[in-house]
Structure formats: structure tokens, C-alpha cells
Image (cartoon, rainbow, N blue to C red; front, side, top):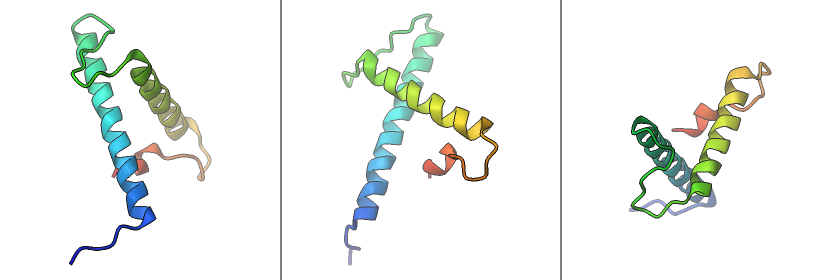
Length: 81
């Protein structure tokens, strides 16, 4: 018997999908940089703005995680199950 889809499960799934897409963007950017360019090759049709949003979110999350000393600050790694 399948468990019913709750709003919380749907939100977790959407967050997981978003993080996977961001991870893919970072891998494509890393591959492009290793090839000596900043223009990633994408078969999925991603545009420059998609990569820019990913970099913005990652930088904001990592800076907050690493440098904000408050105990209630964002921990970006808890969002990556």
C-alpha cells in the first residue's frame, strides 16, 4: 500500500529536484571551465541565466553556512539529504 502524498512530501520532492538540477549545473560549469570556456554544453537547453541563478543560490547558501557564526543561521548542507 502506498503512502498518501502529503504537501510536505511534495515540497521535499520539489526541493530534491531543484538541488539535483543545481548540482547538474555545477558539474556542467566545472566541465566547461576545465575545457577553458565559461559556456557549458547543455543538451537540456539551459541558458546562461539558469547557471547564474544556480551560482547565486549556491554562493549565498555556502557563505551563510561557512561564515555566519550564529547557531540559528542557514545550514545549506541540511537541504541536501
